[in-house]
Length: 203
Image (cartoon, rainbow, N blue to C red; front, top):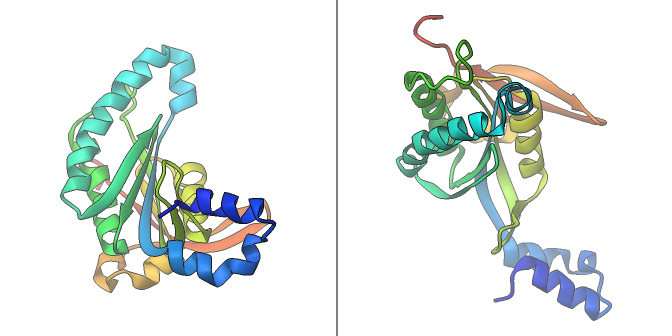
């Protein structure tokens, strides 16, 4: 079967507007999944102050810490890109558990960004039906966009932000201490729910 982008290209070459094949495309390439987007805190600032190799060495250590967490929380697939992680799960419960465990394992490792600043990650989680291309492009849809904005642009170090769709589908007890917030960015307004990881020292 051709992947999503190949199929769209075929339609366009045949002078067919993909919008006219909306239902067919979603039936063929649509998947309901949960996505977890992770971004590291302080990439630009620390790279400028201490050099790119300093940051990349910490990034390698973070990847080694996070990979076993994903593998033990029913991930479907994941990939690292620079200081980002894109992971896919069947259900938001698995994504949320992986996110919370990720914050803990990074904190427990005492991985330091600088001599005085702990390494922290920021995480966004979405859930819903998305279009999937069996290439490096991955998944596309509103929940992917929201999860990316939450994880990469909104969350602070140690925070997990989940979309309202992921929150609604999650087991109530798992998100009982998540607090509501509102995303306002580039004309976009969306409700999300926030969890701040607390270290033992700060709790």
